[in-house]
Length: 597
Image 1 (cartoon, rainbow, N blue to C red):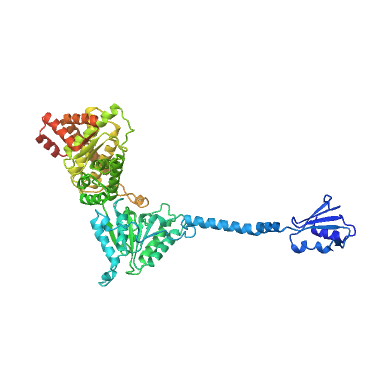
Image 2 (cartoon, rainbow, N blue to C red):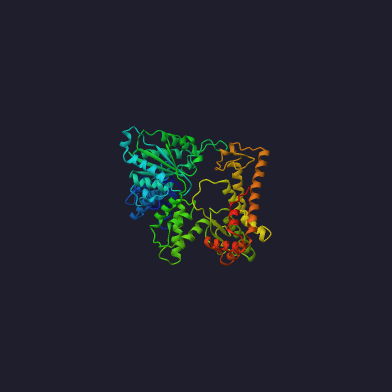
């Protein structure tokens, strides 16, 4: 029943009930024949204090205006009132505070990304706990000299401004992975003693359009707050790729980010003292506008170190570790051609791990020699078990490589031959040059092809058939022959021309639009020239195997017995076998000096 109906009953001469119990705690009125009788009607009292106080005014001290109705009031208790206050007021506030603190905690754990989504994610290094200087960098002397000049710009800018020189705005470090680009950047930060802002190129790009450009603006805004500052963008090719290469023509967030980067780099005031330092191993995919003078004024190429550079790098990493007296950095440098600085560091670290595993307190040369094989070829696969037939074929194959390599490439002596499985290789023959090579003659490349085909020639001579283990050799032979014919101009029929696709990295979007057409006649000539080179080298390899068959058999026997032969022992075996077969040094020299036609 309604509350108005209840009030009407108090004014009625014949009310529908004789007693009412008003429970202000529950907000209800129970109407019936008496206080103790079951209620006949239940009335909801509105939660309004003024309406709830209307009932007591119907009578005073039990004297009712309608004496036919007995009214009993049940007032609320103070603790129940507080429960209502908590339920209606405090609990919602507590829930709001709970979610607020949870949100703040989540923000702290994620670095505030939800609020600072468009802010730069750069890191600032200044007086870092691990300070790197140019003394910690070796093997890249020319690059160090260029960058030392940049440091001098930051230390004494007035000296250069006095003669009208402008501080370069940008320096681009290019080179293969592991050559030391990031390490050089850290050395600059340690030498210059100025704020150093570091960010990766991939940190600019997000799935939302406009975020990358916003982060570029914020990064350069932070850099402008300092009089002298270095901004280092690592792997800049992630954001600085050539524009207009998107397949399909859709919008690319990278392009918008790159546009903002170009504007910011070109918008600096002259001699502002802020230098942009960037690193990449793919300079060929960078946008030309990014490389023009005024943005990146200097491009420093960092190549793999030569033997002297590797020697200096090994000295830096070995001086921090306990080593035995037999450790020779000169020997390590000669036996690691093509190693980058990162490879040298990994080699020394692997040697330290091997020494600790073997219970040694110092690193000796044996540990470092084993780590060379580990870095070159991978870990030893002791779980790979070969059958007797496979093991014999593998020994013949590697013996053929070693023998033909010794006869055709005396400038690259065989350092080690082994039938121990490492990584994906079942066995290996390691030839190391006496000195670093930067140019290759036609005779050298022919000798390389002949040496690579030596394993296949040995299988054909002894077993009478070939095995699938030579698949990688054939791939290398094909690449060398194709380069000789198509790129290096070492084919008489093709002449000094470059035909077909070049060997540079493929960049989808740009290369797909280039014309790499070749006439059918020219393609046929290329195939014939490649085949002629490979067949002539194969014939020479088989001739060497037949001439020095006794030496081949002795190498196979030794490999099956000890599994690994060092270069000195291998040379002794071949010399003894040739002397026993009546092959003197004259015949050997003629065989080594006769290149394939």
